[in-house]
Length: 325
Ligand code: UT7
Image (cartoon, rainbow, N blue to C red; front, side, top):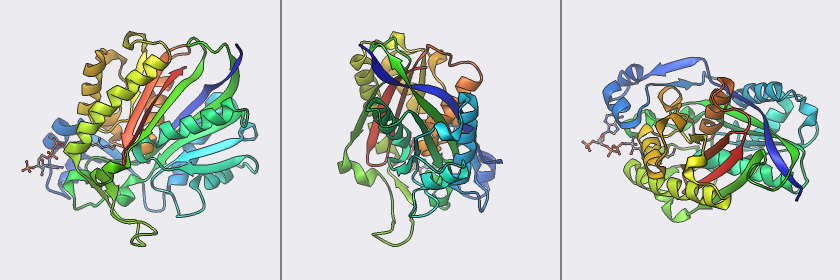
């Protein structure tokens, strides 16, 4: 059976130039390099400069993804930006990215699912492509999370970083089997009962200010480990795969201990894990496409490989996808 598949044709990542080490943070808040490394695996993160906006990071990543794909902006019908830190309350940051790329056609909009945003955006773009409503899509995760951190809260401010990553999806015919290239399936979940575990204490309709990240870290950790292994198993089963079929696990990069726990639950060897959390920290919606771009650019992820992505974040919202590269 011939089906339309969303094949990953290009990828790109962009990080702000400014590197902030744990030692530098330890001069600002009551923390230490040893605590941060032991509890999270994070050693450094990038932070955007004043005036460097989410859309600026996104445009850089998108240009790189188009270059790798060998595609021109006019071959793109859809620009989706997953972000929790839009430039402005409106319009969608995606429209600024579209303009920054020199595009005047197609549709551009944002998706908000916090750290799970890239998986939600990928699922949306894939469904547009499967339905025949788009042939080329830019799926971007871009964040300046530093702008919503409480720099006096050591429990959160050490965990996050800024950055952007992008993939280009291109419609290509497949056989409808799990050997096809492209996005094989996407699996999304939300459970709003857990709002209070991870949220921002402000917003347009509540306080009129953007607010700061509040997190019950230990509780989120618990949900993360349980939900991520469950949704990965759901994605494997939906395609008739077992964990052994995975070539690369590219998880949302929140905490090295969560990544290790997920590996253990799936009985996956560490060599199949793409981990960037040590040098990117948690870049929310940007973390998966940044990690994909890093591992595809350095030759680890190759054409034909089975790549599994997964993420969880505020909402709680979580999801996974199986992608044949
Ligand atoms: O991407 C969205 C999803 N987010 C996540 O996945 C985050 C999930 N949670 C985590 O990664 C971990 O829970 C954290 C890294 C946030 C915290 O690690 P933890 O092992 O759960 O520590 P904790 O929150 O239970 O805190 C342990 C101690 C506390 O001190 P007391 O009460 O035991 O005296 C904290 O006050 O560590 C203290 N602490 C710190 N100490 C030094 C908290 N933050 C820091 C810090 N530096 N930055």
